[in-house]
Image 1: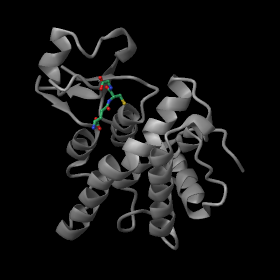
Image 2 (image 1 turned 90 degrees about the vertical axis):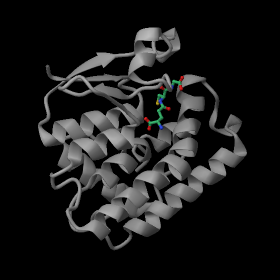
Image 3 (image 1 turned 120 degrees about the horizontal axis):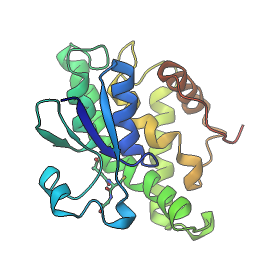
Image 4 (image 1 turned 180 degrees about the vertical axis):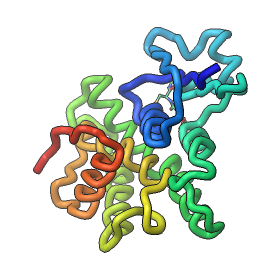
Length: 201
Ligand SMILES: N[C@@H](CCC(=O)N[C@@H](CS)C(=O)NCC(=O)O)C(=O)O
């Protein structure tokens, strides 16, 4: 059976899986899950992911796997998206963990508050805004003078960070002065065949 991806196409965490599988040519069936209708909390869903969150995949052998960064790392094994060198692989992991602890909880959550809950930029949580700005500043420094986050090729670290960074303007974050980030987003989008999103010039 082909791999099944249970996800929401508006979720950066879920889009990471689509970007990675599409890039690698891994076949999959996408199954839309609407968390606003409680579809992540049904007993059938909780068997696949007891955390009740998307994305979750059911691999072609029937085994489930959750957590976006675990999924993309698994899909990328043995490919150019995951460096073979142990140190470079650990640097990818460093960024995957950082994304989940220091980037996604702020950049993605501010976007959620604006795009889903209809808050204005001024109504965002000030601490989340400050931490999101700090995360994007970190990326700007990390990408200055570099083409990719780790090594000489696009890796799953780029894909994991791309997902919500390209959506950051929807969360009220201004990328216009972050030139290294903007060029890297454009580079990733070109590599992945994604249409550029409308954003501040
Ligand atoms: N750390 C998880 C986060 C997953 C997550 O937060 N998923 C959201 C959608 S982006 C969700 O399913 N929320 C519903 C819920 O938490 O009940 C991952 O990277 O996969």
